[in-house]
Image 1 (cartoon, one colour):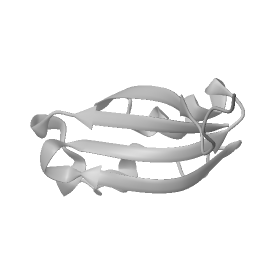
Image 2 (tube, one colour):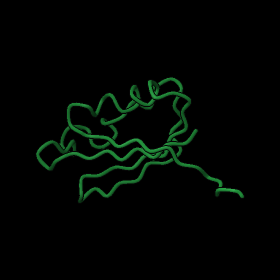
Image 3 (tube, helix red, strand yellow):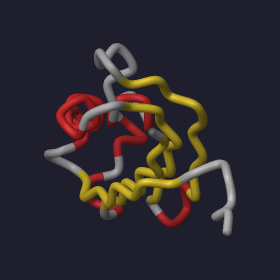
Image 4 (cartoon, rainbow, N blue to C red):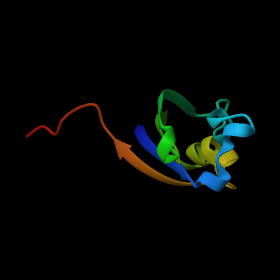
Amino acid sequence: MLFLITQTHTPELCPMDVGGSKTLYNPKAKGVKLRAMYGAFSGHVIYYIVEANSLQAIHKFVEPGWVRCTCTITPVGEESIKR
């Protein structure tokens, strides 16, 4: 299943000077495939499209950012609704 993860942090907690946005997620989290990552960096927001089969796997993926960020996790799809 695909998920859109919206990760937000405050300017005071920005990781720019301590490794950057790649420090906010775990690329080796088992059960999660990162499909895309986009940033609205001046707004301190990062968007991830991930493929995962469990919420626990997604939690492992975003765990490095928990001390700096809040996340919204939304299931999304590539196909439109069929009638």
